[in-house]
Length: 325
Image (cartoon, rainbow, N blue to C red; front, side, top):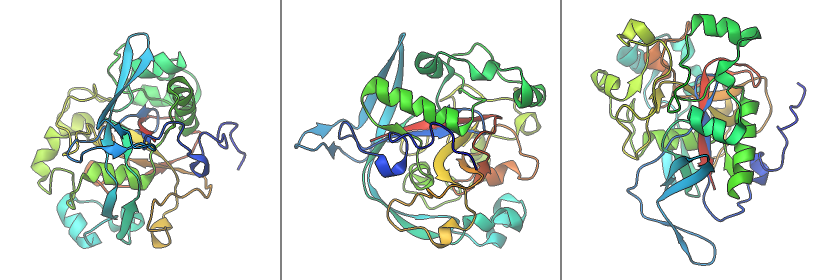
């Protein structure tokens, strides 16, 4: 597979996540295959220390210029059990679906997140993308994007809608430019960081518990078939956040992670700060989206453990979140 020019940029690879400032890290995740999205985490964990003894705030706001800012929250270091805690039969009983779509969620395994990091409280918005990149990828009307657009109407001209219609390399380039602009290391979150932040200390199917009737209060999913008025991504932060203050972690748009996708990675992943850096043909996605995917029911994809993937250059409707260290 040919390497994208930005892929091995020292500022972007996991091996070189040195922190120009001693902040944990900014996590950027992309949503359903188009744009990057920024998620934030709650505040019940105190402060992290900078090198030199100073403390950093649990909340952080980045000035992106042009009157646009980005809010992030500090996520504490800790341990959690990553992957599906239920058996396939139990999962299907709870949310439906087929067992073949669950195989990459096992085995469940304990993971340590060794350092705190900052995470955007919202998915990356169109205003934030334009302030940093100066482009509007969601307005593209050529090639594959045009075909997708015909099937998936997308909002236009709304600054607080998620930025979408980007590839994983676009998301990484955004991180590179934002790092340069702020002097901090900004990156996509790893899958482990994303699930840890989404769970916010829970062990249930969703961050709010197992009661599916409450999903409508926390996430956009299923499109018009689920009673939504708009079959595209919705404004960020309109529904309830998880316990750590992160919005839209269930649905709305898919979110890119830094890991390359490998369905068997859980069986051999390290227990501390795991990240699959071995290049494959696919990049990891999390969160689920505002509409049901053709081969996976919405409730499966919007769960905390639901995994998906996309080609690194593929465009559709993903977004992302920012992670800073």
